[in-house]
Length: 359
Ligand SMILES: NC(=O)c1ccc[n+]([C@@H]2O[C@H](COP(=O)([O-])OP(=O)(O)OC[C@H]3O[C@@H](n4cnc5c(N)ncnc54)[C@H](OP(=O)(O)O)[C@@H]3O)[C@@H](O)[C@H]2O)c1
Image (cartoon, rainbow, N blue to C red; front, top):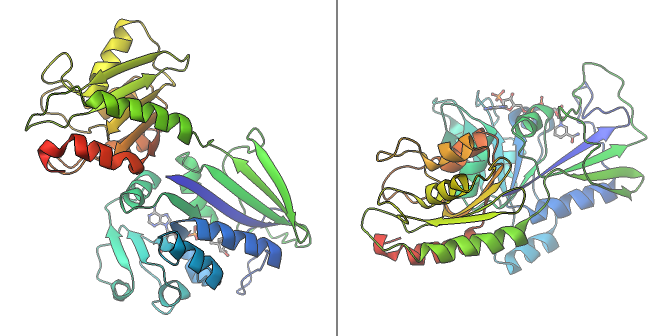
C-alpha cells in the first residue's frame, strides 16, 4: 500500500482555530487538487474528532472524477474510514449520510451501536497503525489518503507508515492561539525530497518520505515467484520462493524445503546469506507469500527471523490464506518498523503455483 497524507495549515502552522466554526484554509484551486488526490485513493481516513468538529463529507463532489473511477473499474468513490475508541459519533454526520463510498470504523469498543446501520465496524482489542494498514490492505486498499487530524496523523508518522505528505500553507490566515490544533510530524521534514507548487496563493509542498520502488520490487518478486516452482508440491506446505537483496547489492535465494523438510523459503535464503558472511541489516527480503508469524516445527517464525536480522523491507505478493494458521506476519513486521509492500497483482501467480492446496 502507498499512504499519502494531506494537511492544510495557517501561516503559523495551525490546522484549525479554537472557535466552534470550521476554519477553511484551502483556496478553491488547492481544494480541487485535494479532490484529485482523493479520487486517486482507494480509501480516505480521518480521526473521529475531525468528524465531530468539521463534519466532512469525504466525497469527491465531482461527477467527472466519479465517472473516471468507474471507467477504471473502481468504485465511484473511495471508501471512508475513521478511528474511534468511544464510538461517540453522530449517525447524522455527513461521513455516514453522504456519498457513495463504503464506510468503515476501526474501534476498540465492543459496545453495540446504531452506527452499524450505516458503517462496517472493525473491532480490535488494540488499534495500531500497523493493524489498520494491514486490515485495509487485505480489503483491497492499495492507496490510502489520510486527511487528519493531528492525533491521527501522528499515529501513522510514529509508525513510519506515511509515504508522501502534502502540506498546504495559506499565508493569508494566522491563528496565533497556542490551544489550537497544530501540525507536528514528530521529526524534521527538511531532509526529504520536496516538490513545491502554488495554487491560488496557497503554498503547497509535497514531501516524499518513502520513494516508490515498484519496478525494482516487481523484478525481484517475480524472481522469488519463479524460485517457488522448485519446491515439490505437498499437502502440508505452501510452495514459496525468497530473494534477499542486501544493502550492498548481494543476492541470496531460497525456496521451501530446499535443504530441509521443515525449512521455509525465507529461512533457506537467510541461512545461505549468513553462511556467506553477509550483513543483512537494512536489506530487503522478497517472498512470494507473506512471511509466517507462528511455527510449530522451528524455534522462530520467518517474521521473527526477519526482525532479528534487521531487514528494513519485506516485499511479498500474497497475504497467507488461512489454510493452516491465521498469519500475522505483515502486521508484526510493520509493528517492528519493517517497511512492508504487497504487490497483489502477482498474487494469482502464487495461487496457481499453490493450486495443490486449492488456493
Ligand atoms: N487543516 C487540516 O488539514 C485538518 C484536517 C483534519 C482535521 N483538522 C482539525 O483537526 C482537529 C481534530 O484533530 P484531532 O487531532 O483532535 O483528532 P483526530 O485525529 O481527528 O481524531 C482523534 C480521535 O481518533 C480516535 N483515535 C485516535 N487514535 C485511536 C486509536 N489508536 N484507536 C481508536 N481510536 C483512535 C479517537 O476517537 P474517540 O475520541 O471517538 O475515541 C480520538 O479522539 C479539528 O480541529 C479539525 O478541524 C484539520
